[in-house]
Image (tube, rainbow, N blue to C red):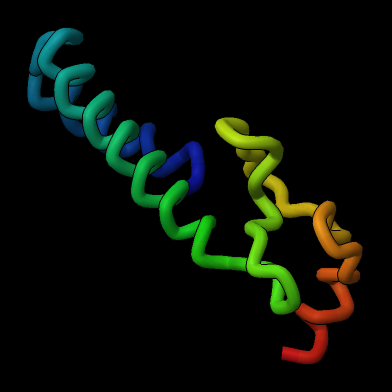
Length: 84
């Protein structure tokens, strides 16, 4: 969801005269759920040769931008994406 997408619910809740605490109690859990769901979906995209996620950087670190070349087997993932 784009950044402007988070502004819409915040403005709507502010227009309805909800307090800042109520607004954040709605938006923060939604943001956490969005990050978890998006993060899980990103790990279903894998290298066709070795099945490593191009988003994974080490054991517990991930990046929002995929690698262009697989760090495990060296497959050019940009060429693979063009043929699919």
